[in-house]
Image 1: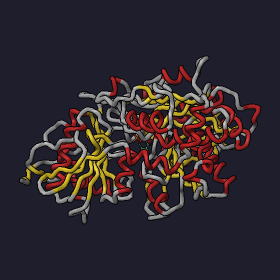
Image 2: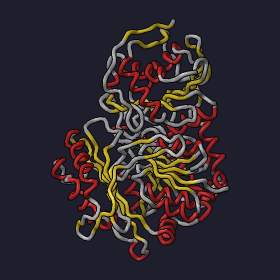
Image 3: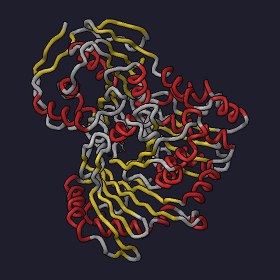
Length: 542
Ligand code: G16
């Protein structure tokens, strides 16, 4: 029933910021997915007879790879697979299922916010037993195996029925098809005051949630409409589609434009939100105000004790390096630790496991906590709703009060997508070469204080991750950060992160791009963005 198939390596299976992401036709090459999955198993030890969780965001090619992964798990000796009905598990729900059922690990099939469809993106990621993305030592080992792989093992059996909950046997292994929503919804009920949120919604507080035809649809319908009583129709685009309805399931101001416009309009609901392809990102927009992910992290941390799950206080806050320093001021006021990690949720795992941080967040629309080991879009929405239900103020009032207390970090990210890879690498190399000569240099009214290439020293396992982004810090606390994305699937994406701290509350009403104009100009002057990329403006501004 089990066969061993000879294969040859592919040279391009290096996991990026979040697993292996490629175009679907790349994954459809003979043995491509099989090679990567076998390389995952070959990098692990001690899983014989143990449980593996498998699920994905429902995008095109999800079901095919789930069948392959189940048959390979059986042939490689796992004892049980838990798989979401229809092959569906949002990324945070997969993390929770791994933890709740004490699985050995999980395979999460997703390319997150990237588009789906026959010519679009697909991805495979391995999560370890704590429910979080595999750390670099594991992803490095997986990559090493992909370069030398000669064979893979697969059960030679018929496809599993993914649409009926319950147990089946596959080549001596048990496959349990589980309800993808219920475990996750129960967890949310333990963290948040559902009674207070329900009462607030019943009192006329109006919300809208755009599931972007992606995986959070069933979760949001169940939690927001069925359990919390939000008006029917509050959850939009709630049926997960293999191509996300042809849209880019990225909850930002470009791809969730309709939601943004509704929230800025005359009859806007009180609270608007969206999530991405696999349910780990979030977009928060109050009536008339977009809350940047960096601000959202700071505001959630500052108010977290209003939710029952965090009533005892936070151990610490962690943020990725390019995320604004807004959360640092909250941590300082609360007298708790603040940790600055490289981009990639995997870097938060050790801090959460060690109990050093309770809430984590990233500028890339990710926020989460110690309840799972992934960022969690609906969790962020529910924490906001819990805070709003208790404070009974508007989002804009909460934001203004926050800025008055802590100061405002004006923040924006400029992305240059699908830039020629050689040009993008050349730009980064040229910046790196200038680093030692930059301090003291003046650009208009700005003076560079320090410049470096960020290195992270993990305080828990003492591993070191170098070259995690170039930071140019100006006198007065403003900064510009440059890095290349690790999640794109064609060419290179240059990300430029721009930040200015403004303590004066009378200056908190300036348009963000205006408030950052001199820094934006300085970034171009330093990196020669226009000249090197041939682009006159960013593809996406968030
Ligand atoms: C992934 C990672 C995040 C990271 C984001 C963007 O998110 O989990 O930690 O911030 O990619 O990374 P990059 O700037 O390298 O493109 P997701 O939602 O894509 O899984």
